Image (cartoon, rainbow, N blue to C red; front, side, top):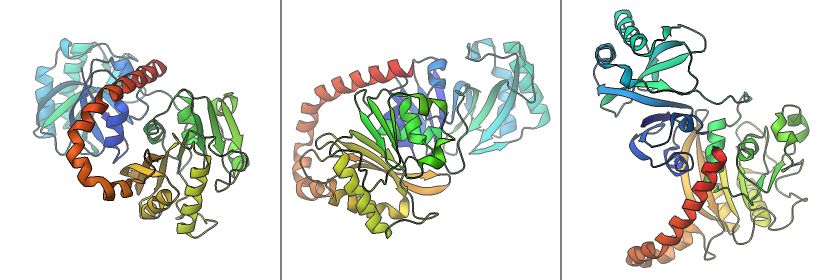
Length: 383
């Protein structure tokens, strides 16, 4: 079956890495900065549960892209019962919407009526202009030469987030980028409203540590699952010292430190990034510790320099948007050979090129076995 999902802008690479944990046998048909079309053998119910999708759809039909009204009329003439599989959350009503090139748009009234009649004849549903009902969307993307007619899948209910908080979708995506495991000791040292901690609660973990100097002001707004889960330890500590945590106690850190744009930092920005990085390096496991850090894009060079100076390696960098603001995501951990990413690039580029094929062949077996086990674990948990 073909599916279409939307997600936070700039996170396509993260989505591609995370998608295999939630759907089976998928192949990408199209992707852009904030959306992807893929084929998968997974059910619509399974796709509806993808935590990092802002919206998820089943693609019911496609037609070569023309004007939106002309395309709507084409769909009216081609839709039949065979285009409407059983979907989760069935309701008696429906409405038709159009979303083209990133914006909601209107349909000619006559074209809309013809399309609504075709849907009603095929599904037995009645038009419901407002309220909770099944939504059918005509969707077009800038670089896509076809227009899609899709059924929107129901989203799981989630608690409303405060203004400025990292979204549920991005929180889940960044936690997944940290390669979560069921024996992890997880830490967010700038936990704030608890966005990343809540996302981590949806995945297996041994212990989950929330730490923020403003714990008292945030605690009253915590959902019950955060305060009621026995795995969670709440700390009100300075992220630059974390006195309650021993050296090497933490397996993984996922965090969003202050950006220095709307709040006062205790140190000049470059010094602050050094102190954060040294704190990470102290508490992370000396061999397998790993991290995902979200920061303002303008501050990314300071963080990269500081992380590497502290002995941590940046393995991947992603440029994204957070609530419309340019941001950078660093994914990394302990260098496997004691060198940072940049040092390794400078010292071994020629040797890597020569040995690329041999090393890839020698790694393929163990890597695939490990990923297969991890995917099965994540799939069982997500289901």
